[in-house]
Image (cartoon, rainbow, N blue to C red; front, top):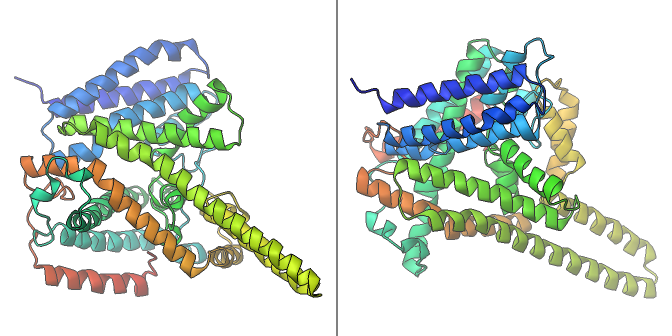
Amino acid sequence: MAISPDLCFVGILVLQNLVTITLLTRTPRSSFLRWICLPSMLYLTYLEVVLNRLGETGFVIKIRTGGHAFTFLVQLVNLLFVTNVDLTTKADKSKVAFQLLLGIRGIGTPWQIKHIPPFPRVMRTHPPGRTQYVVRQLAIVIWQTLFFRLLTSPVLAHDPSIYGYGQEFVYTPRNCLNRFSATYIEGVIPAYLFLDIVYRLGAIICVGSGDHSISQWPPLFGTLARSYSIRLYWGRFWHQYLRWPFTSISNCITVRILRLPKPSLLEYYVNAFIVFALSGYMHIIANVVAGVEGADRSVWLFFLAQVPALMFEDGVQYLWGALQRYRQRRRRRRGCGHGYGLKVQREGRVVQEQQTLQGQQRGEKGDVVGAVAAAASPGADVDADAVADVDAGAGAGLPPLWQRCVGYAWLTAWLAFSFPWWYYPIMRTLKMKTGQSAATLSSGGAVGLEVPVLAGLVAAGAVVLHVVFKAEP
């Protein structure tokens, strides 16, 4: 009797977790035993990829989870060799080790990543109990599921011909419209909903069972209100599952091996290049597991292109700041010549404040951001007055509306321009294999309700979430 590849995959995954937990709890940092076990961990990762590819799970599940083996391997290398976590002296070391493997963002640990999205304002000012939290999360999951079903309706599905070979590099006017709609209707928004639904279901189970506290499950995604640039989109809005393992590896390469000066522009952009390269390789492995062929070049192109896009964005912001400083110098000379020294001084202070706000817009560290992160940190006492000050400062820290509109337009256009490089081959393969939308869940069932009914439920649900639960976009 043949053993199921899926069962073997689960067994290998459990074995790899047990070995890692044992090494974290029984061996000190820089132990030679950790290095001895590294080849076996690499081989177990290889087996995971092969068994996952041979498994009977659906295409969508494979494309969503196929890169987990590589991500998990990078996290093991991070914990055992880069961060050198040593839990041998902790009383609850096994539980801490398991949490480090389960929560890849390091929530509630000394290694918690920066810029964790803060809890919604209503949860910071009026911390809910477990039951209130679970009910709120469940209501959001139900609404997200309805929205997800709406986007996967056959009425909204695109003609498979738009995903034909080479179409991801065609930029005719008609193709550009298709790229825009496909990017958001079948790509970015469903991916966001899928990941957030899974995360919230995990929060419901863990918090509802009493095993975890609410503070251990901060939001997975940031807010769209402050995602008006590529830097803020990847750094503050999109999920941060890969940040700790990938940035640890990149920092090890740039600082420890290459010895690049930190902080510096060179160190920053090399770090960004390595992180996006690791992310690209992870998604290539997911393509291999799911059976997406001939897409390696497109994947590399999409992820590595984010770095020059960041450089372009930074360059434009630098030139804008230089132009503002030049205009201020001219005003100062004219003002001094006509006796308006006090007015010029006031304008100088205004420009200086604008430059500070532009620095926050570029994602640099600021007092407001640090305070928000502290308010969102697990274990931190929620002080209503302090949170109110943070919210007021964050609102004041936003750039002018027209600048945010330009930023949103740039971000939206860039994603529609580049996202199909990665996603079109996935959609092409999916259409050939199943004829379903890539956003469809593993059940893949047809939408049971008509689109107008679903649209009405989604609209009404959004109002209910905003009024009853004070949900934020």
